[in-house]
Image (cartoon, rainbow, N blue to C red; front, side, top):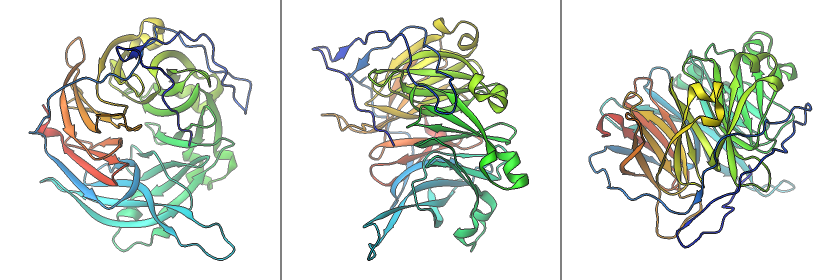
Length: 411
């Protein structure tokens, strides 16, 4: 997994402006398609974070004991959460590699009165499993990893006493590397995987795989992106997929947000990009409502808001709001009927004098406003919201915690 550092020098004010980049050199290894040149204004990289009160009334619950949790997802019934994490590495054996990382899927029950209870855990992969998504019908759990994704049966995971070896349904593979996040189309027929080390999104035909068995023909193709694509989300109407890239070129700091025509991506991925806009320094995650698309710009320490309509019709003017949050924001979630956002301020690079937390931002008016901060574990990373919006589950990657926030107690 590519790790991008802070490519900036702090001025006396703690902020510098980054020159506008004009072209992208990321080229598909599977075709001649290139990521389109970004348009719109750039956003400053920053080491300045916003001050705000601690929101002591917000109820949180922690489940500890996981080793580097990453992806998190919630079942369609809202009663179970799934998290993938590194579990006990195997002991060295004579003649073998000294250590082998093994990822596991853990299931937790979500109590209606608050709290997480571990139900079962099982090894699922010899390599890392990262970003996760549950299919809209609730039957499949998809976890990005290696060059594609692993697909698990939710019902088998939830079945008491089931053997972990029975959980895996099949695996998608591509010619790329660094699979980090996954998304499933609204009809459940296609899986999209961001290939962080190959600067593309891979598109897989899940419906075909389930009918005919998993194989190399399940790969539909690739969507060209900028450098280090990571976060993805699908618009509420199912027409578009939004994806972030941490930079436009290998030497650049400014990242991008790409809008993809979802139906076209399922048929001709290399010709499916609608627009690409500048999205701050190292944008990493994205969520969307019918009218807005929100992006965490990790090295700008900001939350950005784009007009969903203008990303399609007038992308150069799509950036409409921005607000400073905490240090190195990563995951984010829409809460309070889309009137607020919860943001994981990861402090990934251990900046002096700050700690990890969760920022609460009000988004109901014409501007974004930081309300305050909620206590978190170390390096909060991925987030998932329960179907009814009552709970948000966060993977605290650095401290090995799974954290639940009672959304009803958020301001």
